Image (cartoon, rainbow, N blue to C red; front, side):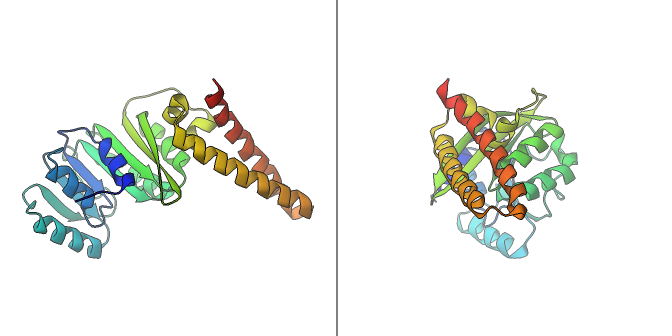
Length: 231
C-alpha cells in the first residue's frame, strides 16, 4: 500500500513502537500502513461515520491485519479509554473541528505520549488548543500536495513558552528551521493578500474599510514570519 505524500508526512511523526489511535480514520489506510510496515504493534481506527469504518474493516481484513487493528465507531475521542493509545493521530480535517475533538476528548489524553496532527485549515487554532491542553509543539513539517499546503504538527505533554502571533499561525518549528515549503506558502499568501488589498483600495467603499485593515494586519504577520528567513 502506498500513502500520499501528505499521509507519509503524518506517518513519519509517529514514534515507532507506540500504540496508535487514528481519529477520523476514513478507510483505515494510515493504521494499515503503520501495522503492515511493523512501525507500530497495534492501532485503533476510529471514525464517526459507519460507511468509512465499514470500508476500513474490509481493507484491514483484506490485508490480514484484524489481530493488530481494531475499529470503533466514535465521535472524536469518545470511545478511547485512558491508557489505550500512546499516539493519537488526527489528520485531514479542519482546525476548528480538530480543536473541538481534542478539548472534548481530554480524558484519554492524560496518558497519551504524543499527538500527531494535520489540520487542513486554521492551524493556528490547533496550536493554541495544544498549549491550552498542556502540550508543547516539538516538531513540524509542511508538504505541498496538488497545489495545497499541509502542516503536520507533533505535540508532547509539557509546557512551553507563549508563542508569538506569527508562530501560532505558521508554526514555531517551521519558522525556526526556515522550512522551504512554508516559505513558498508565505510568498503565495503575501501576493494574494497584496492583490486583494489593491482591489479594496481601488473600490474605496466604506464597507471595505474594515476588511482593508484586517488584510493589512494579516500582511504584517506574514512579513514578520518572512523575517525569519532573513536571519
